Image (cartoon, rainbow, N blue to C red; front, side, top):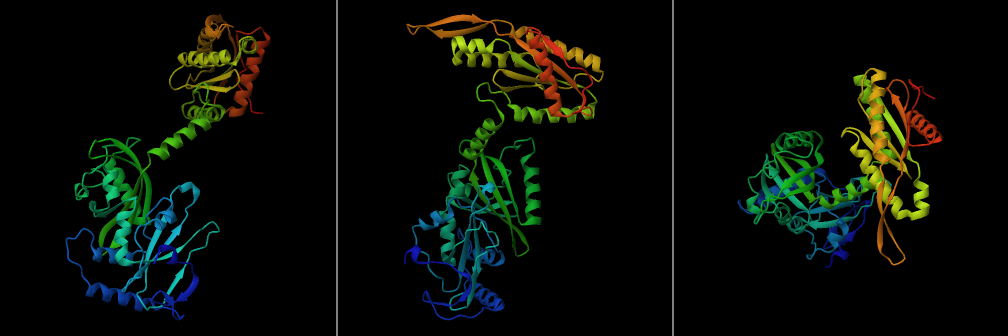
Length: 453
């Protein structure tokens, strides 16, 4: 019978199935179900040493409620399975597929054991959340290893810290020629010595295991190295503790996270950086300024904000076009960055306006302002140098020309206890406009100390 004919939806109803037909209604006895499962396990002990142990399979399923799977597009993958699902003679499973919260980016597949044939059972979807989408599918216990094997998700079973079972997807993810290469290994052995951030893989993994033992599961990003080429690969992992006869058994669900992380980096660039110059935008500048103020509070040192505006930028755009204007903005960004330290921040606010955040100057305000003026003068001199630009003639030939586009700068000195971030930027902006009114290509300093509005 095709899978589509086996999908059934339940909302707390209690039914008994006989040859896939509803026979009668009643309510099951949990004790009876557990007794029959225990009896079934005692009567049908599989031979030891096989790749997938039915004994391990049944005990894990019986003793654990939701077993994770984390299958992408779970319903679609199940519908495309090339084998049919059948009702087992001695037991069956209820698969509850739920779409997780959008922020988690992972769809979860829960698996739990229900009653055996001709026993009364109750299948109830957990619909506490209005966003939950659930389906109930009957699956025989004998078919679960095939689901484990056919999944594109990498599944690994750990006994203690060592790998005892895994599927082919896990072997591919870890670059193993044969899955037996992974048996007896630990996750730390299959990873670089350190994870991003500088933590040792072994110590960090033990920390995640401790969390999983306390809460039942732990999700985290992890870098592995492939066995075949030692290439480092970013993965996302769900580690679930499975109580099993007093020993430590864990189920790992893993997937390649390279594409997700690349997309996240692209989104971060769009959200926090200027597309034309690659500099931090206003949003990121405010975050950096808040950090600088917190740092100033701890060290008692002053910081400075320099607000600058190019003096003849509109003339450049009007006469030579936006392509030349964009090139001047890119060169301006590079020149300013060469004048500051690595710990300082240069930001483009929009148009031809830039901000330089100078941190940790001096505790004495006069010395701090002297340092800030020295950096400002260095920037002013760099920007008054002519820009070499290209423009096309009527014959479509490009010709080089020089254009001067100096800047007006306003400087506001600050300490964290004196004002707020928005007021610092406004004060530096006002000082810059005074410099522009005085003819441009000059520096003006705001009155110190600053006061909050």
